[in-house]
Amino acid sequence: MNRRELLQRSAAFGLTAASSLALPGAVAAVGTAAESAPLNPLIPPANASIPVAFLISEGAVVIDFCGPWEVFERASIPGRKFDAFSLYTVAETAAPIVASGGLKIVPNYSIANAPAPKVIVIPAQSPANEATKAWIRNATKSTDVTMSVCTGAFVLASTGLLSGKPATTHHGAYVDFAMQYPDIQVQRGARFVEVGNLATAGGLTSGMDLALRVVERYFGRDVAIQTATLLEYQGQGWLNPSSNAEFAGPIKQSANHPVCAICGMEVDRSLSSTYRGKTYYFCVREHKQIFDASPEKFAAE
Image (cartoon, rainbow, N blue to C red; front, side, top):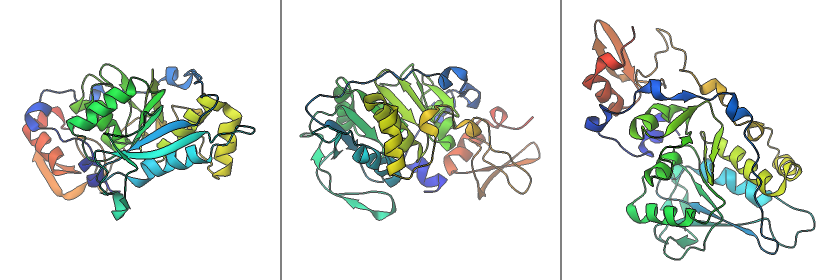
């Protein structure tokens, strides 16, 4: 998935609104508080599986939901008569959706008839309509965890549930997220962020780490380690919420390797503007438009 596709899956924002929203300096780097985040154990049902709803729509990024799906599927608790988790997909309707790479999926349920989940997973995907947002808000009243992965954070944020709270997303979308949702405390360099029954993961594979974290909260570290071992997953991000620290700062650039003047990501060299004799490049047309509207806010000193 390239940068432009990633942004297309996040909610769009208008230039008029963007000109008055928070700028990149409002995006906070993760500190030591996140590194010592408490476990906050969850209690699984004694005689039933934990229902996990994967909310999907057009363009849903496959690894964002299939990574956590495999984690929850493979979690195994010795002596337990029921599967640890019961997994199903939910969409606005039961009609097939086309995920990233052309993968066609027939949802198990629509939002009208989906069982009540205890865990919701929201991957990067198309913006949610009002009915889907209402379903997320209502279902989250009784979830143990409602989690987003990558730019699925834009969908979760659009419900208002993250208002005033810390959250993270793919490192290439930090600035977009801060500009569109200035009341959310965007955490740079976070592998995942937890607050109450809400959780947000960074990009792509971060979703597996957050899923392992959820397994640990329900069943303990040994089960989470066994699950990771079974998957031959060698990432350690689920043990340290701050392990995306390399993304806390902007990507280094040079004359031969410019980065977007708005978000610091890889650029499309056909998108450029000149301000005070210097050329600036952008990753998507929307960022060029934002720069052109107020270049003094983004131009290098």
